View (cartoon, rainbow, N blue to C red):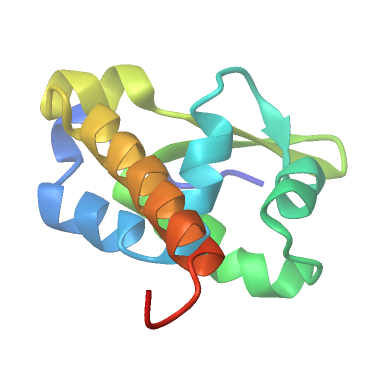
Length: 118
């Protein structure tokens, strides 16, 4: 099975931002940002999604937008972040988005610990 991946020069900012605008897909990118290849099952477990069928759409959006590589390997697909391509097309974008996601998560955690009305 051959999966479609856009060439580096075909990656478009509107597609990348749309892909990263979804919280589940953003969580996937944060996992893949650690580097290396990850099988779909391990990523599902880390982001807390149990239904593989739910993720099929998310994998396709990330792949078609040029954010990830998805390579068949036996009965699994291996996922990796296309950091080099994204950094070449949009320097600093991925770092800013990942840092922003971490910042938002930290802020949310603080808000959840502070009693309302304080």
